[in-house]
Length: 46
Image 1 (spheres, helix red, strand yellow):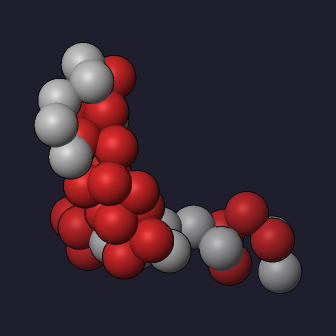
Image 2 (tube, helix red, strand yellow):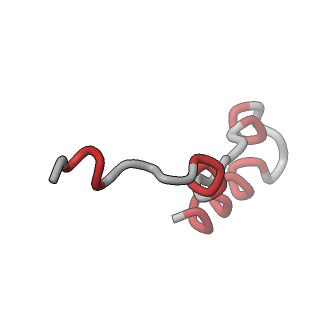
């Protein structure tokens, strides 16, 4: 069996929904509470 075929993504839409998207903008712009909000999003994603 080919390892790459065995581990291949079968449903691209399902795989992309499983990847969390986190907006780091609020932390990088030094918005009030931005760093806490981003940290919370990272914790929840993991």
